Image (cartoon, rainbow, N blue to C red; front, top):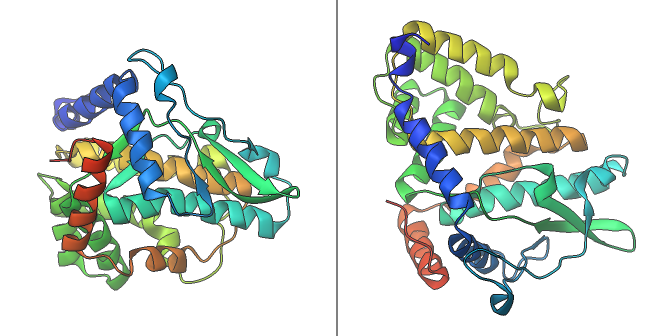
Length: 286
């Protein structure tokens, strides 16, 4: 890859390396599991397994069993049932991010099962906490501010949000490329109507065309410094969209998202994050 394209690669490579090392840290994974247990302790649609301390070591992690069926076994369910699963998935991802500054960074289909009553899906079992990404509240604010900038077509606010994310070296052309990508990722959340997550797109193709177009511009017009936080936010958002496509769910994603962020306040979220992270012995993000 040409030097101009590789100049911004160091941060993403560091991020991937850090997350891979965390996959082998079972003590940290246990703490992350406890953090999610705290986040969803009173939730009726998200279940988190309990850590079995007496059966766990630094090299073995044992969790309680959660009864459930594979997510894809519900592909032929009624639209109402598939939508119920999709709403639980949406909550499992966006609620922890907007209220605590943390995401489940590996939206692999095998990391979820669906629990139900009388053969109907009622909620989601959230499994595997080896790839958890935590964020400073200022980054969460930047994600929400980017959304609001896109919603209002407010270019200065969009640029400010990109800079708050940590992008550096942005030119007019690079801002246009990043905005193209942002409008794809946020697209369903900007559209106040009931729809699928992406029209006329198969799960395996979700995001490919847009990623190729943006990558081409970044190669030609870069370099740009990509912040570490972007890597798994982007990966998880694409993976989440693929799950919604598998389910062929139809939602008003705009309303779901705005209901989730409506009470966002930097100081409130920072205090909530600090309390929960300390209780679960999870390091606070810096």
